[in-house]
Length: 227
Figure 1 (cartoon, rainbow, N blue to C red):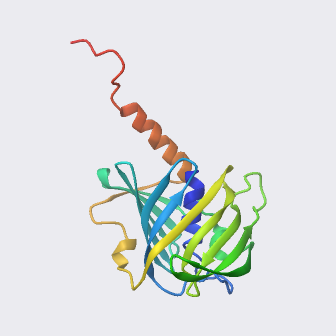
Figure 2: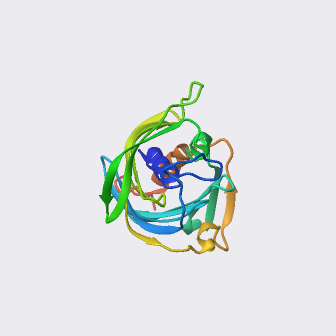
């Protein structure tokens, strides 16, 4: 499920940001890495760029490129649509990222052992986050995270629920390059228009875009229009 894959990327790859208590997920460096998102239907490859306060993730779904920029320090995220030179802006909460997961409240972390993942020495950590009060029960997640001593997330496997939707998360990272990242990667590109959405969650937005794409696709099986 897309929303939970994004939840995994944007929460677990972000790790612990400002205001977190001592945590094995604290990110202490900047880096880039190749990413692999596995679902029951497909495997999607991409690339991740990270700093302690920002994230950029790029992937390709068929012929369409998906770029997400998340700013933990500004509490906003952008979905870039290169064809339209458009950046859709949402709060991190509406992007499927509960605030509690950003400040560390309610996350139980239990180290369970040491493992090597893609050539990196990691600690395997059992993580559990129970939903907050209210009927929506957003933000539940339980599973395992593999993290280096610098807080670089190498793998995330688990299941969760957000915005009333359930699904599995299976993320892995490789080809890690530790280096200072260009700050421009985490800003809106020049020439992009910004569309700010309020009260719309990311999953609903993507579903609407898929429906619109289906409506605008030429009908090759129907009758030809009269001449």
